[in-house]
Image (tube, rainbow, N blue to C red; front, top):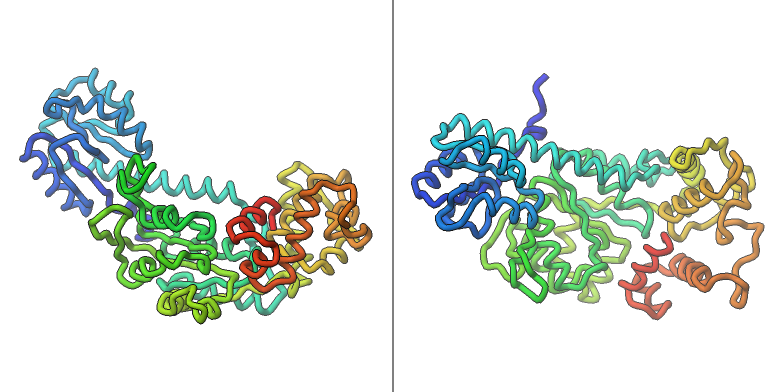
Length: 443
């Protein structure tokens, strides 16, 4: 059976550096003929693929170590007329990927670039697999007894192969990030990168740089070029979490990118293009934000092509038991334990608890229980005080750490409010601080 097209190595971005104009021209024509994107220059200001060992007054050999130190992901192929075993060994030792002596034939160039493209694609796939292993979610099975959740999963599978912009909506912790990963994995872009940006975590200036990249010297601390997440996700997917918190100054730039696939880096003048699919998620009332002027109406409609609503866990008591059992098996294996399940009291406590932190909170509760339980059945005594009905609620003045009181208060406020902004207003903190507190407490 023929290998799917999307698993073939993609085109490379290649910078040819050689002080001989004829060599630059020949290599450029040859590489572009193989479908690669080529820039050819005659100095050593930067390099991505080919380095000449006797580059004018500069040593291409010395350039290898510097380039590798600055950009470890670079693949450097040395082409030189001063061919010898010693120089080949030295080039590889310093970090070059391959070596071609002059004069060379087009077939040699084609073979090397094909090998580099295959290696690059393999490294990307390995990197994504490592990231997946590091963020394993036992709830990723997407099993549900709840009709609303079943509809959300079915719709996600249906639209994943399309190129449509998707909006994932639902309270914090309902699994929007997990579903975004799944949609990418179910799409035609699965072999390409998936990038994630959490909009509330950065200042407007840093968020724009993270999104679109910046050029060296664009602002204080910009010591080198940064390609940005859009460029890094070429051919893949970019997931914008908590899109409702996107600063107003960046909204028109994102709108332009969604419409035209064009953007400029911070401090840069050149218009760039990228083939990236956008997924967005929010737990905010975007319609109200549009009416209040905090969110652009045109951007809202561009993002809201297809909406997938994830119901809160409090509406899915049957799923609570299903997810808890799945998670217990996962965390048991992770901690080298075998559990028979939950006691009846523990299951009842899990079903009755409102789960203001949704699946994220349930995951933390089960992980904690799996670590602390000395036996093979999770009892109500192994659950946190906030979940266990047999333990009295924490009161001001109780002999407990201050952080525990803070965590319980934040959980209760989040459960009683309709949005993060409302919760932050009640708590008297800004949303960025609330986001950090939620991350700290696993809410």
